[in-house]
Length: 210
Image (cartoon, rainbow, N blue to C red; front, side, top):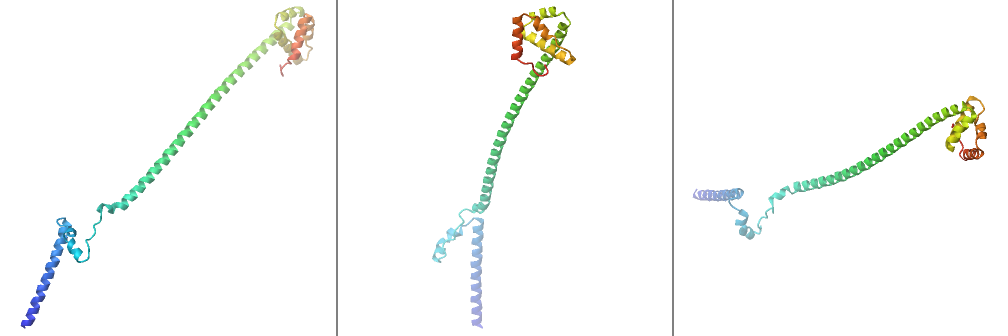
């Protein structure tokens, strides 16, 4: 019985020692967790004797977010690239807008030029029509006069006016289906003046419809 009692007592002591060791280790781990004790530095000689070496620390616990930093960095690069593309497109759009504005200005200038040309042409047409109306009136007035009186009026005019009146007189006679009196007028003029008028009329034929 005594022998069995001694064995039981030894077992209890061993168990208690193991319990003390476990509790001690647990306490050390807890103190290390709380930052009150650095187990790695304190027991580094013991780890070396046991051939375990000192456990290596993670160099920087914040590097756990390294992947996130890398992702954010790539995202920033993508955003920068996108911004550059947008800047390039904006510059292209501004350039195109400038070209379009220049084209619009050119078209507006051309439109103004055409309007001015049209206005000038219309004015000339009106002047021609007014002159044509006046020439017809003068022609009719001269035709109604005695030929010698008509010749006096014609001689006082310049050559171009005389030519225009002769032509409009021919045109009126043609419209009425009558013989023109212009040949007779020319025969009554001084020979030199009549020759000059004839030469100029042949040099510059009448316009169509005139």
